[in-house]
Length: 291
Image (cartoon, rainbow, N blue to C red; front, side, top):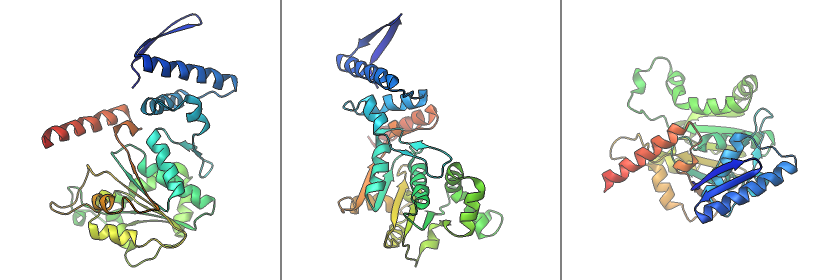
């Protein structure tokens, strides 16, 4: 956050506060004026996200944020761009590495941005298919008591992945791609024994994988493929005593070339402002308990 207060009278703007923060705000206003003269008119949301990134990284400028911002328009329906510095690092990591881990709290865009990149890679014919997987872990409810066949039972676990797809690509197009198996959405268990080449593969909710499941998934990657693994280590639903494969992978694979780890925090939450406050409250509570 920037500790300043702004006041205005006519064409004059007064800035009061911490000297370093005042200098940052002055630079922002000058950059905004320059962008405006160049015919660029950022929206309120874009400006708010840019201010947030500059507050996190004081070396950044408003011009840098807008001129270097990675904008993705994967299927011609919706333009997506990074809304925090870590989101920008995440998109760059996915582009530059064959395997990327995105670890952090809910609402930081880990899954949505990964699906966005997957759709872009498919539309640009850089991969032949998209595979989206999740571990079907019972979070307080028993799968066996859910109505329907196996697909009906696991679909609720996969719904967030479908939601991200339908937000980016029109319904009919997604449906056809699913029917042709160009896009596959499946429980993690369905990956066993397969080799996945020329594919963009996403493992979501990876904190709920066991060590064995994580190793199985990571060794499915074939030539020409790109993998993104996302998860929130504060929301593990594994039975008591079982180790999270995501936590172990973070420790074991952290120094392997070609694998990137991007860690998100509460400042990257892009949902309702209450979500950011809830994440912070739980973090503070966990810290008190651990002490």
